[in-house]
Length: 436
Image (cartoon, rainbow, N blue to C red; front, side, top):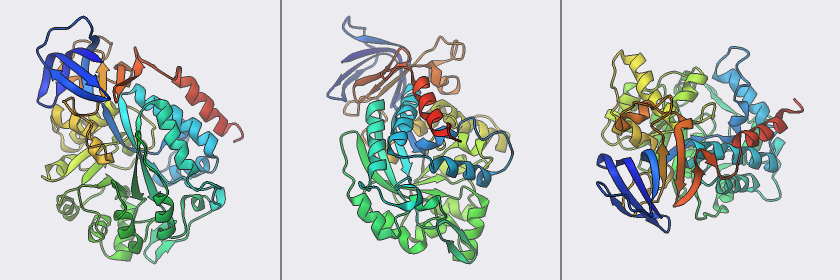
C-alpha cells in the first residue's frame, strides 16, 4: 500500500510531501519531498505515528459519567469501581472491552497495555478455563483492530497498613490467585499471538507483599506496577516497610528497561534519584484530574537521563491521547507558573512510546517499523489554522480521520470498521447497569 502525506511527523521532525510505502505490515519506504504518485492514497492533514496507550483498565469505561453526583476521593470512587467489577463475566467483559478498544482506535491508539486483574468469577471461584477473562480481552482487541499487551496483574492482598497486609475482601477475591506461584502458573499458560503480547504487573505495594514482588518482576516481557498514586500508599509503605514504594520496588528488582512505574504522582527527591536508574514512568493526567489524585512530577522525571515517559488513559474517563499529552504540559504549567515545559517532540514521543508495552518495533514512521499511521485533520473547528508541527496542542480525538494498524485500515473517514462505536458502548454499558 502507498500513502502520500502533505505533512508528517518523522523521526527527524516535521516533513512535507512524504511518500510512505507499506508491505506485510511494515514500512518499506519513507520519502519526504516526493511527488504524489497516482496510485497513492492521500492522507489529508498531518500524519503521526500510531499512539500507544500504555495503561488501561478497559472495564472502567463503564463508569464514565456515573461517579460525579457526589464528592469524595479516589478511595470512595474505588467503591463504585468494585461494584462494576462484581457485575462482569466473560461475555459482558468482551462486549465492553471490544467497544472500548474500538473507541481507542478512533482516537489514534494502535496498541494498548491492559492492566488486567479481573481474573476469576465473583467470589474468587476459578472459571473452567482459568484465563477466560484474558481471552475475552484478546478477542476484543482483535475485533477492534488494535494490538494488545496483556499485563496480567498479580493481586494478593486487600491493602496495606502499618501492621501489614490485609486479606482480600469479597470483591477483591476475584482479582487474586491465592499466592504468587499460582498466579505465575496461570500466567505461564497464556500464549502470545501476532496481535497480543503477554507481560505482567504487580498491582501495587499495597496489593503485592514484598516477598512476591521479585517473582512478578522475573516473569518474561514488560512489567508494570502502580506506584505512589496516593499519599496514603506512601504513608502505609513507610510505616510497614520503612521506605517509600519506589525504594521498595528498586530493592526487589523493579528498576530496568522492562519496568514501567504507573502514575508516580507523589514522589520525593530520593524517589526521583532512584528512578533515574532507568525505568519508564507512565503518566495518566486525565485520571489524576478525575480522581483528584494530584499533579505528577513529569518534568522532573524526564530530566533524569535514563528515564522515559509514556501515557495511559487508565480508567478511560477520557480516551484521547492528545488530551493526555496536553495534560503533561498544561498541568505542569499550573504547578510551575511557566509555559513551554515540554517540547512538541517530547509530547509526541510520550504519546508513541510503544516500547513501554513491549512493541519496540512500533511508534516511528521509518523503514522496518510496524506500519501504524494516524492522520489528523487540519481543517476542523479545533485545528484550522494550527501549525502542523504543533497539532498535538490543538487536536482532539474526533479530529482523527484515518488509522492504520500493521498496514490494515481500521478507521477510515472517522468511521471504525465495526460501525457505530457509540451504539456498541451504549449496549455494553447499559447491560451492566440495567439491574442496578
